[in-house]
Image (tube, rainbow, N blue to C red; front, side, top):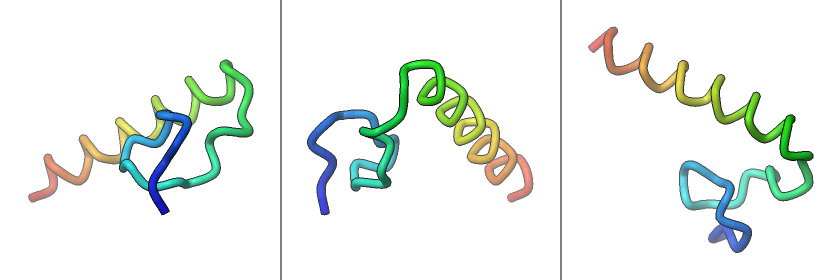
Length: 42
């Protein structure tokens, strides 16, 4: 399902619409770190 709130970094709804701004920023930071780690492992 597409993300209507615009918070999902994948473009698909992952439930981040219910997070507070602080929780959202923390999850986004962890997501970006995880994605960067994946790219450096390739």
